[in-house]
Amino acid sequence: MTGRKVFMNFEVTDTSHTLADYKARGGYQAIAKALREMQPEEVTKEVLASGILGHGGAAFPAGRKWGVIKLNDGQPHYLCMNADEGEPGTFKDRWLLEHTPHLLLEGMLLGSYALQGRHSFIYIRGEFDLAYHRLADALEEAYAAGLFGENILGSNFSCDLVIYRGAGSYVCGEASAMLTSLEGKKGYPRNRPPRLTVQGLYQKPTVVNNVETIANVPFIVNNGSAAFKAIGTPKSPGTSLVSVSGHINTPGVYEVEYGYPFAEFLANECGGMLGGKALKCVIPGGISTKVLTAADIMPLTYDHHSFVDAGSQVGSQGMIVVAEGTCMVRMLQVMMRFYHHESCGQCTPCREGMGWLEKISTRIVQGGGAPSDIDRLYQISNANDGTTICGLGDAAGYATVGILDKYRHEFEYYIEHKRSMYDGRLEVLTDD
Image (tube, rainbow, N blue to C red):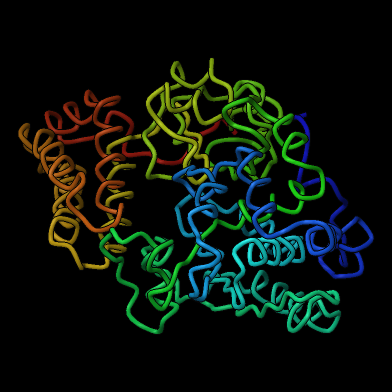
């Protein structure tokens, strides 16, 4: 068991995503409580007191982001849910969107009430077809039940919500690019400052939260911040949905209470290593986070500070487990192909740097690498760090440097012998 649950505490059935089933398990009681008993500022204070960290990758305290909005500034305020889950290996938000869409709608209502937002938005990845339709159906049910629109539940609070389907561009998962896309323009990231909480959607104060972050809010309002902080660790309160894939026997999405030992997670929930192979390394939070070797990660517990202290991050909570016998040179090449393809091209260091990272890694894989290529990969990665508008250039550099730091010897062998130590394998070979 991975500890206490906040989300995966009900049986998934053919109807568990509907309004009737959500209400039967206590749904929409939090918004009723907030509208009846709490001022908007009190909702924000409760979220701040809970200590919840954002679940989109940056782990910024959600309550601090909400608290920046000045309710009496005379401007419209917008709340946007970032459901453009595109980080490779990350598919945990999709579980919430498909299985409990009303939980997300209730979280959006609570957030919009706290921010006094009349209109709110959900930006969902275009490829998430089932998730989109379930979310759209849920919103229709909610409107019919008087949970959106004018004077919600007989209060003075009114809110409308728009679901917007993206076109599958990775960079639109970046908050400012997402807002630009929402405005109907090409999804280019924006320079900051000003922060989005000052000038966001339509140049108005805007809060962007990840799906799972919003999904926690009904629990916090219903049960109080103290109950939420009692779960997890003091510095990483609550739980985390982890999407885990790679060389394991039971890939999937699991809810983990922060502080759960990784070794137990690998043995129990992941079902151990595929084919009985030894663990080589783990990419802990999407490919933008630095790789951790088996020796690095096996003693750790699953929480933000534990992973940061080890040199990586929980990130987007998309974990990729890698077995011994995997070629890390080939893995880097695949990752750089992705980054190069997804660069929006706005910033020169990213546009050109991604191209060079892919070209050099491909040259090594094809047997044409030179000893100087390793240092060149480092140079390009470091040159991208902090020189682009969004974090995509940084992320590609982190991934490259992380792999080179841990597995430089594989690159040196590949260049010297013009072949891989592991025949370029990314799959696990079993004895069957």
